[in-house]
Length: 291
View (cartoon, rainbow, N blue to C red):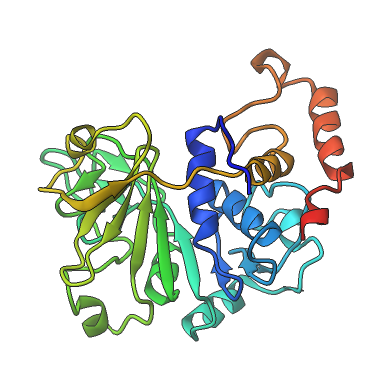
C-alpha cells in the first residue's frame, strides 16, 4: 500500500468514510462525496458491499458519477431497480447496516437540522433561512445500523442544541434513541473539512477525535458552540492511498464532486469539451478492473 503524498481535503474525507465501509455492509448512500467514498470502498477493500440509492437503485456498478438520486448510473449493472418506498421500507426492516447523510446544523448529541435556521427573533413560520428539509435523512438516521455524518465545520453550524430537530442523533443523550423506538444505533462519526468527531460511548456527546494536518485544536473549538471534549491521544487521519486517489479521479472525471475542475470555467458551456471528458471516463476500464 502506497500513500499519496499530495491530496485535497475532499480526498482525505472520502478516504476516511470509504474505510468505514465493511465488506458485508449494505450502505444507503447520498449523492456527492459520500458516493465517491462508497465507490472507492467497493473498488478496493469491500467488493461485496452493496450501495443503495434513494431513487431505488441497488448494487450498481457504474463508470459515471450520478448527478441525482435517480440518475441512470444509479442502476448501471445493478442488482435491482425498485421504487423509492421499497428501499426505505427495507431500511426500516433492518437491512441497511450503514447510512451516510449531511446537515446544515448539528448539536453535541449529533442531532441534525436541515429544516430552518430561525435567527434572532425568528421562528419556524418566519425563519432567517428556510432549508431543504429532511429528504430521506430522518429515515436513514432512525433506521440504519450505523451512521456517518459529513458536513461543513463553519461558525454557527455546530451548536449546543439544534433549533429544529430534523434528523435524530442521540436526541437528548444516553437511552433517548431506545426510548423513542429507533432501530439504528446512532452516529459514529462527523466528518468535516478540518477534523473528525466521534461520540462518547457513555455520554453520547460529540468529541474531537482526529485532527487534519495544519489544523489546531483551538481553531476547531472556536467553531463549536459548546465545551468540546478532546481525545486524550490526538491523532491525524490515515492519508488516502494512491489507488484511492486514482479511483476518485476516474469516477469524478470533471472534478465536480472533489472540487478539482478539469474544465476551465470559461469552457463549461462548451458541450464538446464536456462530452469528450465524460466519454473518456466511460471508455476507461480501470475502475472495473479494481472490482
